[in-house]
Structure formats: structure tokens, C-alpha cells
Image (cartoon, rainbow, N blue to C red; front, side, top):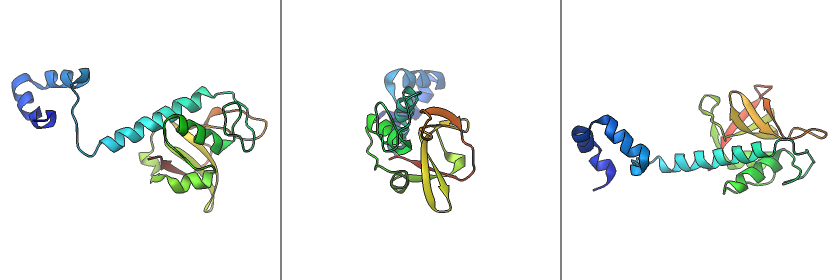
Length: 157
């Protein structure tokens, strides 16, 4: 019998607090269909930490790290370190992600800047309307507020 099948019985016999303690300290409750979501969130959060660790690294066109980055080079590098493969350019990365609405975005999702239908820049959403990105020549990898509404969000699977 799986833990999930025993939950109603455990709740009745032990009380909600005990079951929550059981889950929190390694008992784990498996819910079908959530494994892929949890894995995607883990890759995104890992990539976000990698990008943040590159704070202050110089921008260089065409660079994919670890000592210099362009925008898509930073996202490529960060997700590679998190165990996910992405193509090289911002537009290719956009085409490889699952679309996410602004209301459902979460830290670790990619933020794609666009003009019309053309994607021209990408960063990693950090929460609170901010992203980690490699902005432009003469600048460095940094955390910045998203400055326009002309963005789309994508989740790496």
C-alpha cells in the first residue's frame, strides 16, 4: 500500500499535524502528476541560483561563460548547470519553452523581450518583477527590474 493510499487512514488515526510532520521529515507524500512540475521547478530554481552566482560577470557578445556572457549565453549556461539543455539564441530558447502567463510565472522561468513577434533578449525571472540577465556591451550580469510589458514567459521542461 502506498503512502498516498494510507493518508486518509493516517489522518483519522494520527491527526493532521502528525501526518504533516511525517511528510515534512522524509515520509513524503506522492501525488500523481506533480512530479514533472516539481522537477521543472527544481531546474528553474537551480538555474536561477547559477545566474545569481555570476553577478558582475562581464557581457560579451556571443559568450557562453563562465567568465563572460551574452543574454542567451547566461541562460544556456545556467540551465546546463541545472541539468537542462537549451539552444543557443534567445529566439531558439523561446521556441523550446512552454509558454507561461505573467500571472503564472515563477522564479526560474525565462523572460523573453520582444518587439512584435521578434524575440531579442532573454533573462531568468527572479520574482518580484525582477530578472537576472546579461544586458549589453559594457555592462555586467545583474539583477534588474523588468522595464517593459513587451515580455513573454517560458518554462524550461
